[in-house]
Amino acid sequence: MSQQHRKWIELVKERIEKRGWSQTDLSIVVGVSLSAIT
Image (cartoon, rainbow, N blue to C red; front, top):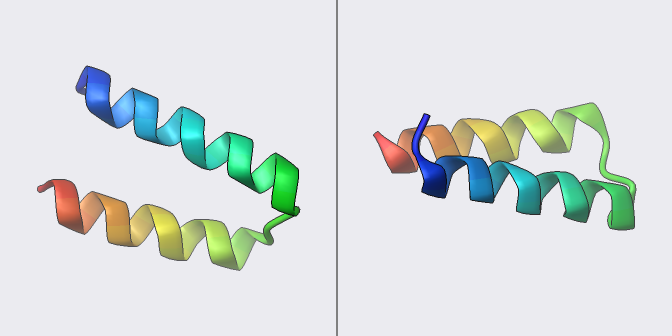
């Protein structure tokens, strides 16, 4: 995992905690980010 990828995951986790995202929202964000990175 790259440094940038880890930083992105940290940001996502922070936003989830602040906004109270659901698991579905999380999986969508992760899926989009993974497809964008590769």
